[in-house]
Length: 85
Image (cartoon, rainbow, N blue to C red; front, top):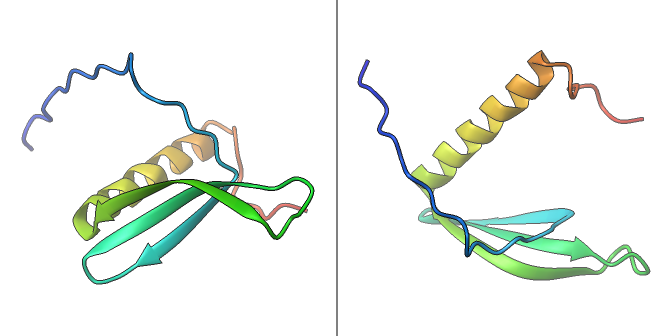
């Protein structure tokens, strides 16, 4: 198995975004994720503040990474796959 390359990440200038709703618009070439905040006074209103465009291969890698993180949190007992009540 090949050794995974080490990336050096600089994030001093990274923006911090907060979201409580994510939308997906998908076509054969890309996935567009909309990050937004649901209005606390009007539950049906979402203010989308950012769109993230990913190629299908990048989206699949993103989904795999998210799934691995979810499984790690389940194994550590931090979260459960049980539906919320």
